[in-house]
Image (cartoon, rainbow, N blue to C red):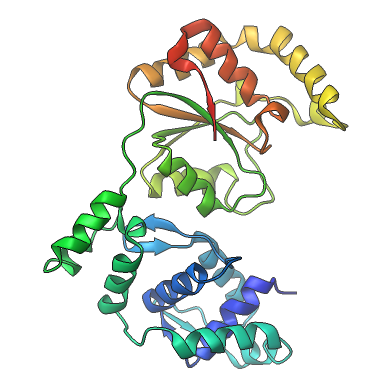
Length: 297
């Protein structure tokens, strides 16, 4: 069984002739998503421009299913892939409509086009200066789109309901330089948020990743939370019994801020008052002053 976005990914390869260079596919997929009210994939600024980690994870799954060939430099639809699209009329129609009006440029010219149209996604590019050497205005737009350095301090962010890419973009635009994972067990069924993938994603966009499991709450203690009163009762116990024992971990966070980092405390829940990260942030504020007053992203 395929997700809708995976069907659309296959349909796009098909609409582009069944074989597409990796860079071209990534940039055309990006342009498709930017025109969509409900994007199939989110993207981050990366060394070659806009990039979707999730699309590559989907490619690996499609290769495993025999729907794409295992070619690193090209996306090639197999006969099984075409067969899988036979009943996917919606994705095929959407992909054909996009392909009909998509830019005909390829290679460096297509990359440069995405930089001009969407300068924020070129802010970490390693090739922008070369591609746009004769276009100072375009380079100036990229520089203007670069998020300003964040002031040292503490923010918090939950990943519930977010893609890895949208989550990383929030961190980047907020000037975060260090992500502090306060989950007891950093595992997740949601792509991108297990420790290994999340730390790599952070590294790829210039954010340092640290994990302080001692600040987490055991999963067994987080069962049966039906309303805010249940969360409040859990956090009251956490603040009274667990947090006072974690002076060393809290001290590490305070040290990172004093080194000049803008630290994001992260866990699962989207709402901070339903996550223990707000307890950690408030403890830091009480112990270390207004520099640590948290901002919840």
